[in-house]
Image (cartoon, rainbow, N blue to C red; front, side, top):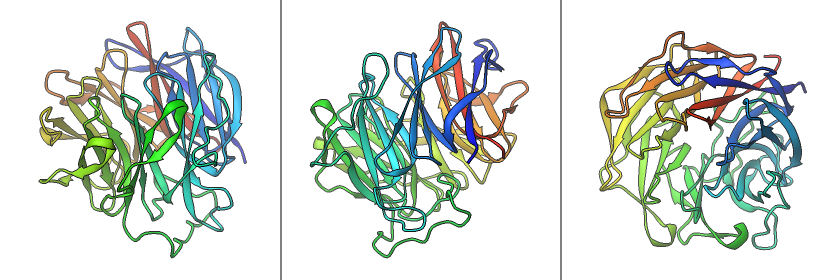
Length: 377
């Protein structure tokens, strides 16, 4: 297949506007790039190429330019999501299918942990239970690691959600009879050197089809979007990582919520609603993690299909979302005092190819944003 691309943009700290970095875009080194994550030190970018089972590592230059470093083949197939710990020492890769499974013969997904070397390269996948991966349930879509690095969670939709995991074949795969009928979250403790151990009680019930997933910065609460039920499910994280749903949840979202992000202050939460073409905004209670919708809680993305979502890491003043239906990126200004979102001039911004995900790194007082896109679409 045709390789995808990674486009780089400078973020204007005064307006939130984005402008292309010289030399952008670059080859994603694989087909259908769908996810990306930047190293906490801002020096490396990792891209998941869904179409050819690879993770590409790029070096981020001082001017935001990307140069390809290395490429790694995952143990399973169709990598769908990435996360990196705060220390920048472990990269978590979510494979849609484990070894031996595919769209033609679907089965459970797997979570792979790679040690990250000082130069940003990846070491050999960490063995857990004698294998180079940990087995999940069916059609996983999201992975989140706690800020303290001790816990990692994966959302298992257990049914095919085409918007978040486009099939590599023309038809969505059939759901095997072995898959649970409802969504779940798999939880693991992260031990020395990245060894994973299943949390007692895992996998945990998670509505119908959990997709996006995030842990708050105090490691006390976990949030996941239930796309089919149009709701946000919130859990308290108990001792050992066990999840306990908040008693007064779930909480309403827009139509078909697929992803979410918590702002760097740990005060606000934002959800991308794929079918509604909106971003929902909430405050987060520091006491019990409960989300409360803001007065103007629904922000229109302008063009349809918001998927990945981020808050700029430099100042925490702007929010961006990839718009997969329109080859564009939406921008919004975030009021740090209220969490409210307002428009940014000239948003949405056109990008080359189908925008699938966004990531960003601080660059002085600015941010540099990276957008993955599939080519030729």
